Length: 162
Image (cartoon, rainbow, N blue to C red; front, side, top):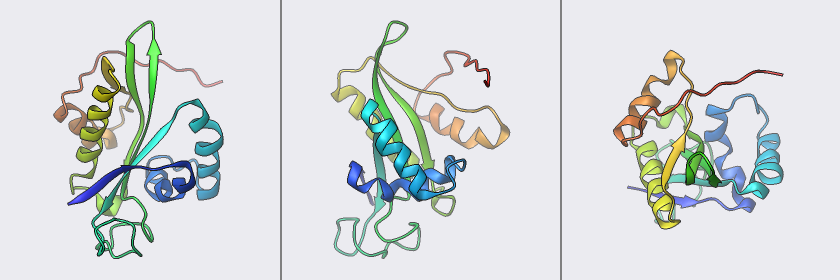
C-alpha cells in the first residue's frame, strides 16, 4: 500500500520528478519548484503525492521504495489542484495536474490521487470536481482513468496562443 499526502511548500521538490513527466516544458527542477511555490501556491494551488511504503512506514525514508521513486522520499505520482468559486460551475475543486512517473504507471497511483481529490472536494463542500485533459492519442489512458472515476466530458475547451 502507499500513502497519499499533501506536499507542503517546503517539500515541493518531492513532487518535481513526477510533475516533470507531465510538464516537460519546465525541464529544470528548480524552475518548476520556483513557479509552483512563488506563482501557483499564492493563488491557492495545492499538491498531493503518492509515496510508496518505506521501511519505516512513513514513506519518507531514503529511497527504499522498490525503485519506483525518482529519488529519496520523492512522490511517484502527484496531483496539483485548487478550490475555485465561479459563476459557471459554482464551488468546485479544479485539478490542474495529475502525473505518474513512467516507471510507476499501472500500479493504481493515479486512482489513489483521484479518490483523495474527490474526498477533499466533498470535505470542502464543493459541488463538483473538474479537470481538463488534452485530446492527443497518448492521453487515452488518462481519459479511461477519469471516466472510471465517473468524470464526464461536459465542455469543449478553447484556446488561442498569443
